[in-house]
Amino acid sequence: MENMNQLRDLLKHEIKDLYSAEEQIIEALPKMIEKANNRELKRALQEHLEVTKKQKGRLDDALEALAEEREEEGKGALGLFKGEQKCLAMEGLVKEGEKLMKEDMSPEVSDAAIIAAAQKIEHYEISSYGTARTYAQELNLDEVEDLLQETLDEEYEADDLLTQLAETRVNERAITESGSTRQRGRSGTRSVSTSGKTSQARSSAVTAKASSSRDSSSGRSRSGGSPSGRTSKSSKSKSSSGRSNSGTRGRSSR
Ligand code: FE
Ligand code: FE
Ligand code: ZN
Ligand code: FE
Image (cartoon, rainbow, N blue to C red; front, side):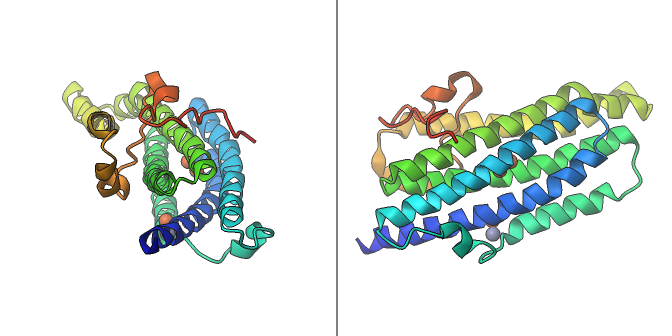
């Protein structure tokens, strides 16, 4: 009982942290969009800005649901916790990205830098939403869990799209137009595949999850770590297959 209460408090804290993170992203993205040269990159960031605004609203809903479940004063949740807690990690990620974007870079390299900064942001969100989602799951807060899962899926989508852009276009052009040799080109490509590494790690996390998803005791030890509910592109809706209330995608959409 006591432990449950504590985890619930932590969940609330994480939701507030994410709220601050999303607010900061909403502020940062327009500058990144303006800076981006590649048209597809611009469009991807623009779309994610719209998505991010919805995500912020979803966090309001989650906090309200959390309050209602406890029969707390749920009303005015939005106003109450606005600005109450600042995500320092996001502040740092945004600052670092902005600093990098001030460097003197060719348009192509600049785009690569924007993608890198954006992916660091997405990875932070993926980690935080994954953790919060798992807490909600453990606490049987189905509505909160669904809201967080929906956003988590979107963050994965955004990250995947950025990886695609980096691998297929932007970085390649940055390599080519800087006139580097094939060999340098390859090493450049390898550094890009940092994201490739991520998906590798990701799939092994999925495997780990799959092999132990029915072992509820092991869920706890993993909960704070990786966003184990990775919804692989191919089986997004089946992602949380271990759970009965898994079909979160597209459900409580607002
Ligand atoms: Fe977000
Ligand atoms: Fe944070
Ligand atoms: Zn924080
Ligand atoms: Fe995001």
